[in-house]
Length: 371
Ligand SMILES: Cc1cc2nc3c(=O)[nH]c(=O)nc-3n(C[C@H](O)[C@H](O)[C@H](O)COP(=O)(O)OP(=O)(O)OC[C@H]3O[C@@H](n4cnc5c(N)ncnc54)[C@H](O)[C@@H]3O)c2cc1C
Image (cartoon, rainbow, N blue to C red; front, side, top):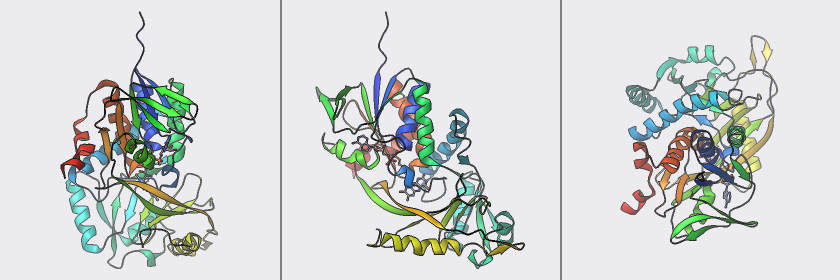
């Protein structure tokens, strides 16, 4: 006698939905359907995609981020096509002032994160195209060699493709609402009909909020915009790793683009985001020297910019796991690129086997009702 496998629907095909679907399809005995109008996500393609456990951390949150970085290293070896788009390049950082940076180094190294001071001249040995004038006047920065980046929308696509090789189905549709039967979520409804499921996982970024609200679940997530400017690709390696300055945050992508992000100073884009992108890109260019050993800086031209909206839970921490309604699981967060590896592994385990990783306790939706 054959027993049907449980069927799990993952709503969302950004980095988070992709990782959950990949873990379900490759590590568990369940059947998986990913439902989203795109493959690659909404916030995901507009992300800076820095893999880090670097700041704004409580100790338990740091541990999860650090664990996710370690699991990313495993995924990069397991998912075909990820080695070409991930770089564990390390980071030189002087985002904070001198006292905060010193505290940051001391705290994170005491937690087992590789973090040290390096003098400006060592930075220039590692990143020779950086202008000396862009480095901090106090003469040193933090070096964080464990950190890296990944091209996030491509990574999501690669994970979904590999999940499909392992039997996952993909439906390029928008979920209009959740199906409810006997007070339990029993599937989803799209324009072409309904799909029943033993469990529905909402990994729909900001799209999680209205879908959950329609079945009476408040998911407290704000949307926080961020600008990323992308240069045209250059063949010269202008940045070997990440450079997180007190101005632009920068890295060079796998295809040679210098990309850089910043928060909007007023919290949202101005009425002229294009002018703002031009102005910011000029600041990015000023981070580099005009020539190195007689070789001029290759022309750095703005190709395009994106304004992405972070799914930002109210207290800054992910919302993961039980929604309070049987059959419905939540996975929504900022820092989703860093966290996708951990989230994919633990949420897939939870849904497929019922085993709840202890680390998920801090991220339950129910924490908001205790306030
Ligand atoms: C400017 C910026 C910089 C960032 N920098 C970093 C960084 O350096 N490091 C880091 O770790 N994180 C960073 N983030 C955050 C990170 O990008 C996000 O946390 C992550 O991309 C969220 O991924 P996701 O898959 O949850 O959501 P998304 O990528 O938004 O994907 C949501 C998916 O759900 C689908 N969906 C939505 N509604 C429905 C519906 N009704 N039916 C079907 N499908 C639906 C969408 O189509 C999409 O496929 C940054 C974000 C921004 C905007």
